[in-house]
Length: 163
Image 1 (tube, rainbow, N blue to C red):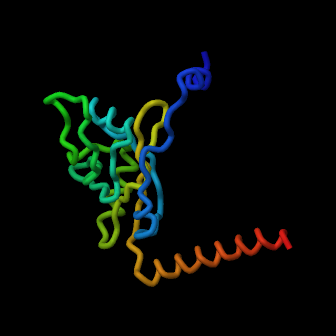
Image 2: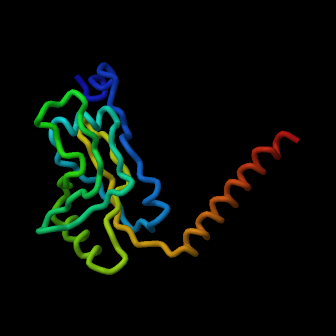
């Protein structure tokens, strides 16, 4: 049976678990990578329930491995005494050349690995992480002004056809 037929029968995956809008506003994203996440069983169940926050999350390279830091995955309600620590460091699974690129990029001041999104792919939790440079306040204001101008233009085009 085809993979898509199985998904259609099962109801499919929930595509997006969490989105970090703040990261896109605070940082200029240079490059993005898809990373697997090493999780325990109760963490997966909490993710399926949508009980996660990545507002403060970021990636850190330590000893040749990339770690997801400050991501909060709530305790699983039906877990027992072996429930996970909500803010533990979780390993991000990347290829060696990607890890080397991330390590090289984050060595410089004002650069980080931002967690942009958590989602499901073929039943496995994935993280979209981006190499990010901090934006200055004026850049944030300029981006906001551009968004407002674009919104006004779309609004004007929408109402132009009604006259």
